[in-house]
Image (cartoon, rainbow, N blue to C red):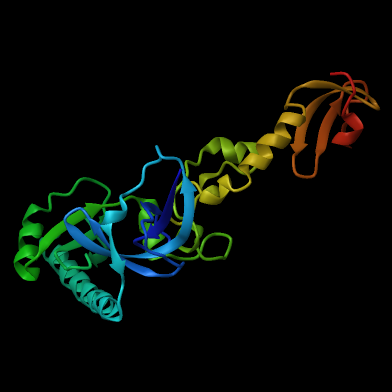
Length: 268
């Protein structure tokens, strides 16, 4: 077993785990980290956690120091310059008539790299744009294409539920979401109603999916013939959370709803 700390390099981004070493860290501490060839500033979101030796972590030697007041001033200055870089890059994209949407500009802590995140429907030839940006900012330029979900996570917004987007408030990592989840929860399969502002299936479909799967294992399936207190019939509807089964009775040719506890134990 080894002790690690969890760091986030972007608000609500994925958590990277580093071996803790001898220093003591508290949640919300800012630390300077060696990431490849560059220095980055990250926030401690998990002060201590034990994991298996074989789990993928970064070495403690990459944790250089806790951020000082001077380091935090550098971060603030970088953020101001990022806004300027964003406007300049956006103007150059417009001049070149490139089919891409600029989402974010981000300096590394040591300003040795400037990354531009963009969204695009297709591949974009941005080689000439990179050359122009490099001559303007005199640092290494990286243009990175991101997907619709990452774009929504960075920009934020209000979801169909009327609340701020889950991905931009508390979700660190995206999880796979399938149309089967909507079917299991008896939701409308109209994609406009179960898609977020990113155009993908809503992440919240996954939140209660495990509960629906467990309830579904206990209850009969659609189309299954079962015995009821009023005779035999076919299951035509399920309300999983309220544990209600809708049955079409054969003899009376009518539909009746039964609490599952009344049917539990009766022959199928």
